[in-house]
Image (cartoon, rainbow, N blue to C red; front, side, top):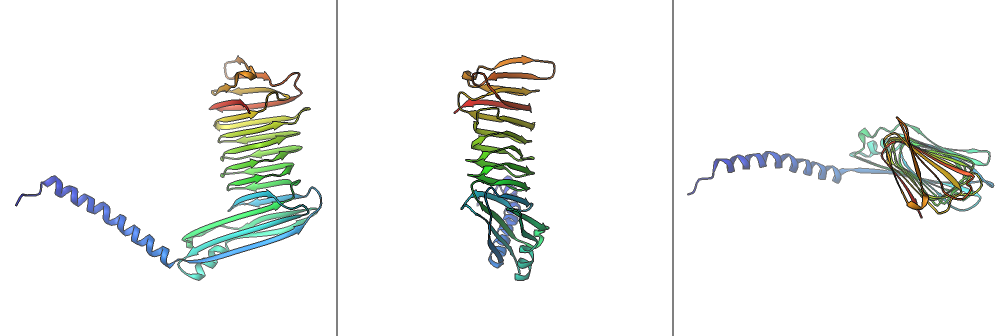
Length: 292
């Protein structure tokens, strides 16, 4: 009988050492999945409101969706699931963070109270969805992902970790969107008044500025990329400043460049005799200026 080479025996032992724990973890995961008990909490509440209501959200432990619904009411839908190995543990976990809703003069305030401690939970999910009249002012504080769509109003967003996305939104008055360390993305957004965007991550703006003195200020605090897409012409003068970033712009904008010891600056009139302004400030990363 031919002897098995020594290296083959060593390799076989090593494979066994690696494979057995992996199989063990797989069996454990399958066993836990089979015995998990799930607690589910789903609550939908509607509130009558007048014209141009205000929605205040302070949500720490959930992804949030705010979207346009029917006029004259705000509908809050909270869907929360937690799973654990016992029914009592699952019920305990699902009740750790509670949503409290209160009426305000022509508005609704939604706040998540308590604490999130999923230590006894094997699985966890929470979704908070709010439908508002299309013309609604928003004030949102959120740690998770936030998506806003088809809303027209004054918007104040304070994000922390998750991504902030606005689609088909009209920003009025003094609107401020601070994404924290999460990405900020605006698609098909119309700016009137004064809007400020800030993030330590990437910022993407696609939309338009209402003629007549509208301003858009973008500040990328980290090593971030900034992308801006606007129709040509746009009633604004653009100034882009970066200490170590580079501008990549459509030639139609005709940017000119100035340099100093600490900063490089690009500027352009985006339309004839502009009355509005766009200011972009970055530390490093790519700045893109497109037409669309």
